[in-house]
Length: 126
Image (tube, rainbow, N blue to C red; front, top):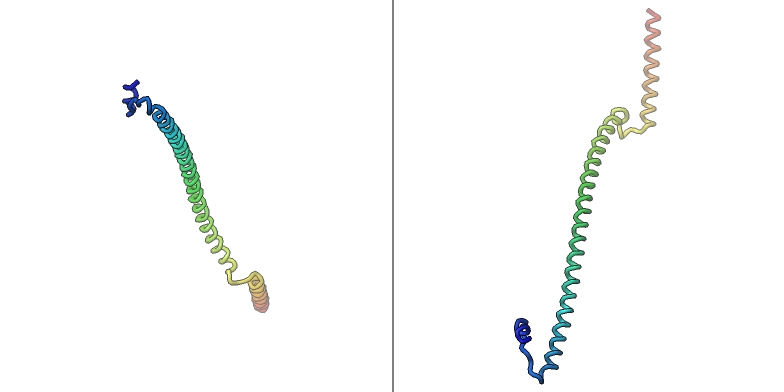
């Protein structure tokens, strides 16, 4: 038994010190158990943190892909909007209201109608 204790750094106590030796061993065992539990708790926390980091990274990657996709869609929509705005401005400039354009077209029609009537009368008089 003394050789086994010597391997652990302990000497066989004298008979008078046996009670103290046992109390010290119990305290050391209790401290060891406490530290072992702390170690297990820390390892569990480390594993949990690694899982959270992995999950967060996957979520970040997914969000980055979604963001890039949305940026591309926004760019495509902006291009389409620019084309449609140009087409619309060719028909009706943005600074002109529909009523203004309607009145302009009515006046043009009236002027053309008058011009046609004048031209028709001119042709009839020839």
